[in-house]
Amino acid sequence: MSKKKPANSGGTIALNKKARHEYHIEERLEAGVQLLGWEVKSLREGKGQITEAYVLFRDGEAFLFNAQITPLNTASTHVIADPTRTRKLLLHAKEIARLMGKVDQAGHTCVPLALYWKKNKVKCEIALVKGKKLYDKRATEKERDWNRQKQRIMREHT
Image: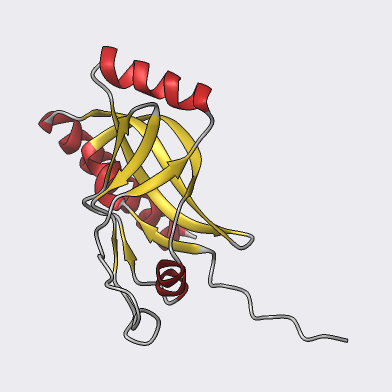
């Protein structure tokens, strides 16, 4: 019998918590990411970050800008590694056309929410979002605090 490899911790590589705070999430999509070998090795070590990343559409294709993957010293010795290079997102043409239409017309934006492993592939969860106003952010924070307080009260009385 062959030994099984240890499973990754949850499969999540990087989260964009800032996007959930800054935007109303309208729609979510899963996209593949076109990566180089050294990038995959770095992501296996958990060296990815997408807090400042965004998605742009050019010539009928989707690209992930400003996502940072820090190169490993051991894996990228023979190449000049650019940690913030533009990476192509792999989506169907119909999905790209629909997203492009919504971004152009309705004032939506497309941002990545998470990078994660799906089997042995790296996937990026992208979302069609609309910007929050300042009072929306305050309301969200107030609701979150109230829910925390409710949980504390429930724990104390049981």
